Length: 237
Image 1 (cartoon, rainbow, N blue to C red):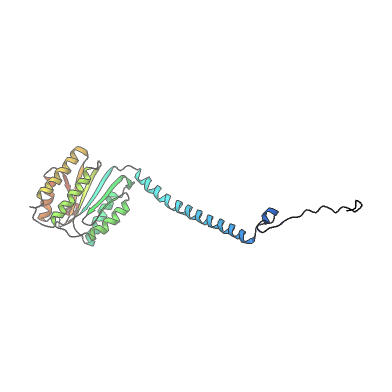
Image 2: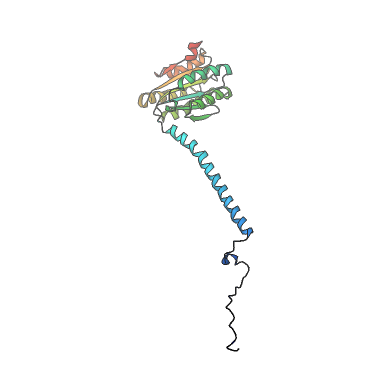
C-alpha cells in the first residue's frame, strides 16, 4: 500500500447476537415486560389476601381476649334434666335474663349442662339464646342419669372458686329415689363443702311440677345439708 493513499477512517464493528439487546441499551422484549407485570400483579394479589385475612381475624380475637381479661366475679350454672315446653321456657329465660344481664355481664362465668349439651359462655346474650334452645330440645333420661349429670356439674363447680348459683330445669324421671339416693347425698355434701370452704353456693329450682312429691324429695337432699334452695317457679304458681 502506497504511503500516499489516504487512510480509511476507523469504524468500530459490533457483533450483535440474540439475547443481548439489553447490553446495547435496548429495552427488553414485549414478552418479557408482560411477564414482569403479571408477576407483580400476582405478588400484590397474594399480599392483599394476606392483609385481608389478618385484619379480618385479629379484631375478633382481640375482642374475645378483651372480654376474658375482665375477671369474673360470680358463676351461673344451668342444669337441664329434661325438655321444657316453649311457653314455660320463655318465662324461665326471661327470669335468667334478669340474672345475667348486668351493667357488665362479662363479669359472670356462665355454664349450661344438660342431657345433650355442655358449654361455657362469656356472653350473656349467647348464653340466654342457647339456653332457650337447650331447654326445648333436651332429651328425656331416667332419674339415674339425671343424678349422674348433677354429679358431673358439682365436680366442675368444686373447681370454681367464685360464688355460684345453680339453676335446675326440667322434670325428674321418677318418684323412686332408691337407686340415686347415695349419689344425690354425695352431691349435696360436695356442694355444702364447696359452699363452706371455697365460696357460697345457692340452688335455684325451676323443676316442674314445682309442687310434685318428687321435686320436694329431690330438693330435700340439699336443704337437709343446710344449702340455700329457692323456688321462684313455685312462688309464681
